[in-house]
Every structure is written in C-alpha cells, then in structure tokens.
Image (cartoon, rainbow, N blue to C red; front, side, top):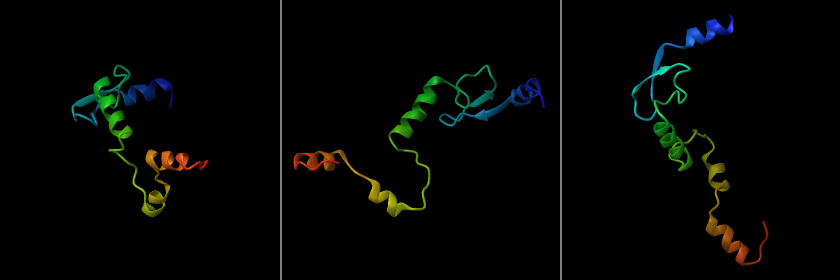
Length: 83
C-alpha cells in the first residue's frame, strides 16, 4: 500500500470529538483530530492533568504505597530527613 492510498483511505470518515461529542472529519485538514478544536483538546489535557482520567490499574495496593503528598515531603524536610 503506498502512502497516497493510505492517506486517501483514512480521510473522509468522521469520529466523535472525545470532549463535546461533535462529529469531526478525520483528515489532514483538522490538526486537532480526534478533537474538533484546540479548546476541546485543552479541556481533555486539563482533565488528564487533574487526574480526572486514569488508566485502570489492577494493583491498587501498590498505587496507594506510591502516593506521597507535598505535605509529607515538607514535614520530612523540616525534620532534616533527606530523600
């Protein structure tokens, strides 16, 4: 399959924007794909940054052990502990 055939095959179909669910053409004309706009792209990025979206993990106990807070870090630094 040549490059031209691949791009022709992929363009012209629509997907739903993950943020607002509006129909979006999947083509090179849309630099924000799969999002409909920069706004929806940034909303999604903000949700990931705020940890509103997570990739599922079966090992929840290990995840709990790995958590730390800035308060824990600062209190150990006040005691003279070095990490």
